[in-house]
Image (tube, rainbow over all chains, first blue to last red; front, side, top):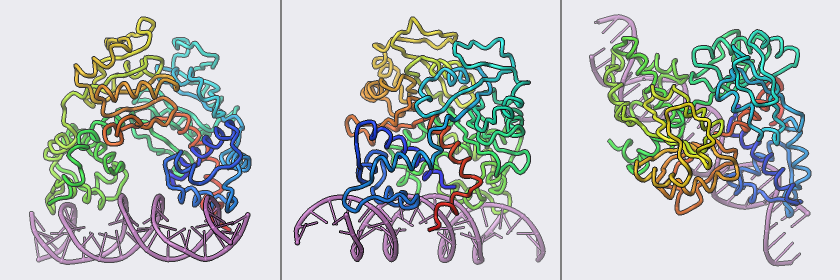
Length: 218
Length: 218
DNA sequence: TAGATTGTTAATCGATTAACAATC
DNA sequence: TAGATTGTTAATCGATTAACAATC
């Protein structure tokens, strides 16, 4: 439910893996807080919620943290992802190599015209007619939508119907899971680049003026 | 300062433009709330902060809203953006046509090896040596970073030094604006796809168990 | 021991919502 | 007028932080 909390968890996990690789054996709430940009108190609170305990004097044991966070966040099982829509953005994701360090694995792409896809990767690209069978047979839970605006909603329905539980959506529509009682059954994360850019422009434009002052004065 | 508030503003703006196109003349806090997924009370509160007032019986006038939101959010001036790093993601953005409806305009790409870039667009691609001059001469305020991990930080410094005030970062590093007293002078928005995917996996894995129950019980 | 750090409680802060008087 | 909707205040809610006792 609490997005910020979950986001912090993934940050903790990454950081702790890095520290382990650097040879650290223990770490303090202080260090962790600095690194992910929160107060030490919040780190301790988070850890307390997760029942991760440290030593009053010696901080938290890195090996313990690595183990616990791997358990909490699904560990190092390969997490398989499909990409639907193999245009520029779709193929860019398929080609991206950085995922492997996070145990994310793009296992297939799907496109309306698979034969037209410029695909320099080893990831196979299938037609849309194969989509649902593939999801079912391989028990895929998470997919990326990178199809044009107009198709996004239909594609989402297909994916959810076949069993997809989480979607990262790059189409510039605020997708909502309409079909079925989907609220509970499919998480959607929208990545809207135009929105982010507009947001930046706005932040910049109000930065100097100081929006609070400007806006709350009568 | 308040991210959610600003994000709502851009959503209002888009929605209102759509309603105007549909021929609406007025709209109620109720409708707006439904459409962007917030309570009507919050819509009224937001509008009140912005000094947008409606009629006790007749809701808010669409023409007024269009005008005001355009003014507040920088209106329909073309907003020029550059893309630094013309790999897969960079070129995908350059090729993306959906920006024009938001008056976003990608005016140039930059790459270490501009001659190697596969560029099917009309957007010119220059070498990195031209970056700072271009930013200064064209008074560019917002840029996208789509370079590899290791270069991101250096590229950011170059951009900020030349006058960039907002950055959308696709490199999988949590960029912070280190140089100068940059806290105040450059907004950074990180888009970390791997993080979003992991986040989805985690949400799914805890959905059934009900994380709150699982986690807060002693 | 003295000093440092955890774990937890209570205080704070800020955003959202409920409620309702004002009024069209 | 009666009904509906705004605008605003006060209440609520939840997350973060400060503070400090416990203790290594």
